[in-house]
Picture 1 (tube, rainbow, N blue to C red):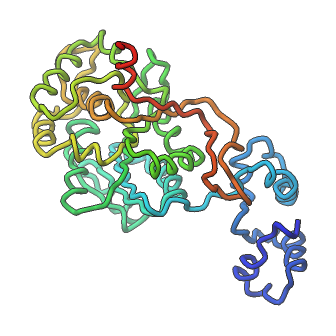
Picture 2: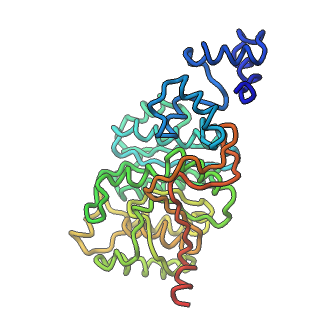
Picture 3: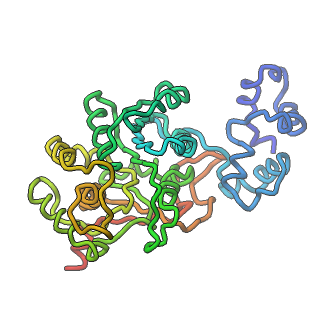
Length: 368
């Protein structure tokens, strides 16, 4: 047990213990430090229980001994440290429902526990004074006030313009918004959380940050439960007609899609946005958005640009990319490649099952 104890880090973090040798420092930790809530750089009681549901009944001391005796050998994660210091992340949040701020701060904190380079852009209603509260949480948060039109699409496009104008570095963008609607037909009762939680879960983010660095052709990452097939729009053919027309208007767009993220909440590779979300397309979309919210497809068979963008961003833009869909299935937390409590990237048997899909290649196989 003493051999696995991070002696140097412990006495360096706590100057009152620097006179102790390794064995005495370990005994201090076991007899006093645990109860005093002192920290170890490779172990955290609350996080160990959070990531390992089967041991949540253990008290502080028993949990530590479980980790020393079992968890280390089993490769269990005992603490999340920032493990991706190169990928630049921008989180764009349309906070139309400002009362949900605490929920979205949790998502932000999850991302920041894994990534070190994170910029946050909030969009809020134009007459709101909630920017004062957001800035009080973190003065570095960027807040843009926007008109109530184009649902989450218009604020996202304004945020992209801001990002580009101000040369904010972005390798991957996490697009979020305060979605309140449900989709009973697809069993999406809490659609917002169905969309967001799989792609902001800490354990899933640990896997994703590895893929962000190592998959060159990565497209978008979304909740598998909220991935809808193209045939979904056979009930709403105006969306297919409108998207086909849009692809003709802008020849640089890919000419097909197989599925899309229903709900418009996802991670996306900013390289794809640079390629396909060009200034002329942004200008066209902005000039055609609805004031307020467009009518539901169920109530109105018209063509609305907001619904086309839902299919455009993750369907058309990502048709030729490797996309990742995160399922609801909980896999073991012991599948991450962990040494001494920290992720080491040796292997990833995901906390939840990840589906990898390149739509263009799938169509080639089906037709082939």
